[in-house]
Amino acid sequence: MATDTVLYEPTQEGISTITINRPSVRNAVNHATSLKLAEAFQAFENDETQKICIFTGAGKNFCAGYDLHEVASNTTGEVAVGPVDKVNGALGPMGPSRMQLSKPIIAAISGHAVAGGLELSLLADMRVVDTTAVFGVFCRRFGVPLIDGGTVRLPKVIGQGRAMDMILTGRPVDAQEALSFGLANRVVPQGQAVEAATELARSLLSFPQKCMRADLVSAHYSAHDSSSLEDALRFEFEKGALVVAEESVQGAKKFDKGAGRGGKFEKGKL
Image 1: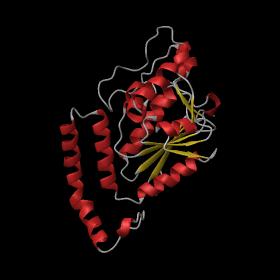
Image 2 (image 1 turned 90 degrees about the horizontal axis):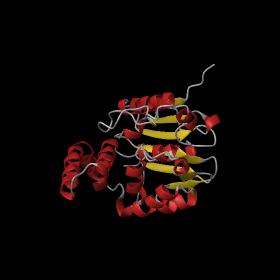
Image 3 (image 1 turned 180 degrees about the vertical axis):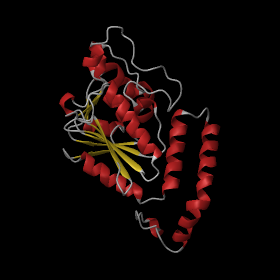
Image 4 (image 1 turned 60 degrees about the vertical axis):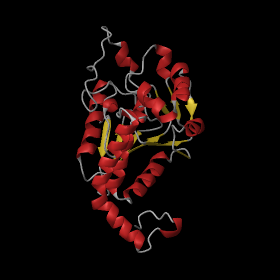
């Protein structure tokens, strides 16, 4: 009986989980899996009842990259996908790597997140890793380039100098070093990445969602799409102003009545 290589699990509370389910090959992604992975992310993006996505891998690893056994059987050397046309357009080799979502993604990472797996982890807005996590451009050894956004997103996340260290050497980066880089946002004990990511997701659910999504989209735009500081500031203001009447005034009234006074940060109580 065939096993689904990607699991998409939405919930009533609004937290979806997307799992790469090929543990026997360390969740390496082949072409068929890449299509299913993109389909799952699009389903999450399109479903307004789902607010936060947890992205993980089955078993002891997040993702070991593209399935090189499939690459080795390629006699033409041609890439199985088309060239980049636009963001959220043609899929990347790993599937959703050319997508940019409007809702938060939290990667829950154990074991290897390397090569294309590293690139997939960079789709996430936050990465919760356990102590077994290892990041790296392991494809450096085999002459396989980063063509799923690794050279684009990694410098934005950890800075050009650290990114070049990882990209050029391909060396492994463990959980603690990833935390010091800002590549990991949280480090938790072995086996607790999904649990910690779920707890984090629930904390995000307690906030006004339109405001949070507006700030998320603005941060994405500033990092990747803006042509200047002026352009980024204009985008931020225009998107943020749309939220003021719907959420900000109500929140200000709650503050005026005493909520959150004195520097208190009480999630879910505003």
